[in-house]
Image 1 (cartoon, helix red, strand yellow):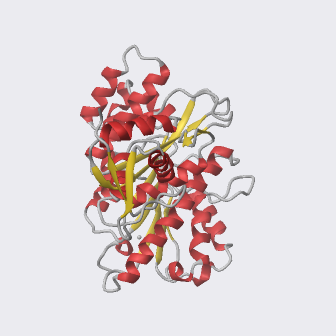
Image 2: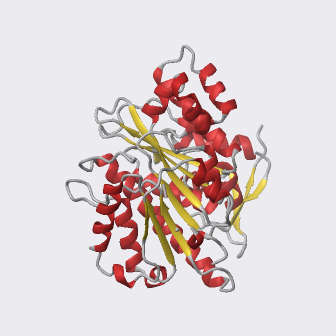
Image 3: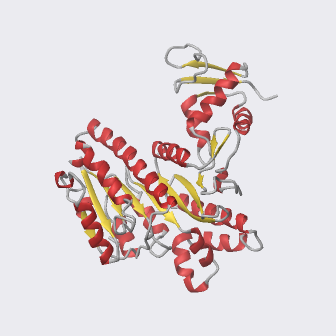
Length: 388
């Protein structure tokens, strides 16, 4: 694990025999974010060459590398991204773990067949460990280089607040983890697995979930469980938490969520755009932040207001919250968009409409000029009229 420290390398993962469409989208979200994250870190490292010139990708439940239908899973997609980029191939440390030794051997073979894999400065490292508190405590005790973690357990064993907080504590460290809602939902009130639930939610939020779920319908229960998990994650150091929901094959029930964690708004913004584009439905330009194989006809509401809310609602929220204020567009966007389903282009569309209607004033902070027709740049300074 010394390869992950700032001074100069984990952890049974059930694995779909064939790659379902949900798994393909999960891998695509993770690999897209990895590529964007790596470019941001690379740019920072080039600006500040005196700092560490390494970064890392760590997959704690890596699986065998390929599905039975031979489609590629996340580790292969990530490594292909690294191999294609000469800068990344000279900086990126990769660590893959699975407690199933057969999965590890299968993954090694799959990775060895990637064209150009021998050109990596740091050869992929493989581990055959069970993820638990020992691993979390180890990460807590070291200063990590910029690292993107993917944590994809089949159930919930090994997934804990301590683990996720330990791996995002240092600069440039982000995480995506798989949250098996069905398994956790069954475990919340099960005394036999209470300790696992405490590790996942913490004692305060587990008790809160248990009390709030009494007598609730399934869709309400889901929102309570996932929102309390996100609140617990924020309480443990993640400033930004962003969930993406997956429905089952019938489209009627939730199977799981991908949950993204970061301390940096730029990472949150990048992942939000990726999840926006991977959503199976958009209403009036606002994404559902879920994948539903039945085209998202079964909308039941979503955690933290992540649901298909039309842009008219955003217009009303902005006028109410910012009435009488003068504010830079980027400040407004960062302040208002967190835990809401809107991406930057939603804000620009609404503000451009309000400007054209004469409801707000706006000038470019660099040039002093008003917005050009049907555009709204990042440099705009906005003045809202007072709410009557």
